[in-house]
Amino acid sequence: MKLGNIVSNSELVNHEKVSHINYLNYDDLQNIDKTLPTLFIGWFSVYELFKPKRELIILNKEIKKNRFYWEFSFDEKKSDHIDGIFNFSRNVIKYYCGSYSYEMIDPFFYNIKTEEDLEKVIPKDYSKVYDGEDKLYFLSGNEIIGIDKIVYTKSLNFNDDFINNLYEKENNIIKDRSSIKVKQLEDNFPYYPYIKPHSVILL
Image (cartoon, rainbow, N blue to C red; front, top):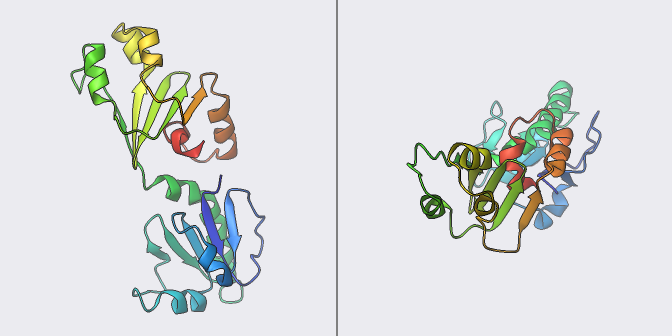
């Protein structure tokens, strides 16, 4: 799965390419996935690309939060170039996930006492579900809704079968009750602490 783009017409110095980033040059911009966080390399190239649309400040490398960033080319500023590409590669998962909101459905806050109460707060228009060992995550638009299975089955004595069958749609269900898939993500992104709630968009 691709989480971001890096666009450059020059060599990326001291950078080992990673599989979760698309690498393009400026001539390929018509093919770029504009929904992904993107790092543009080279101040002069960035200025020519964005100057008709927005004011750019050379001290601010965030063009649009969680979406567009820029960095110097190696010839323009060596240390910034190396550090900037490293930081983007590391933080691209945070930028990618940053456009999604997340809420865990707390039964005490929502005054959920019965299975019918819980059904009422599950989004009906969800497009994807992560069914994990102890959590359920529903993706509805740009919102992630979480259900803690243990809280409902152990603390509130809800039926296990009911909790495990809260979703009705059969497509786009990621079953990971042994947590193998989410652990693989955690191994790939050990520096990102919110893998589990974002697993529904990363898998």
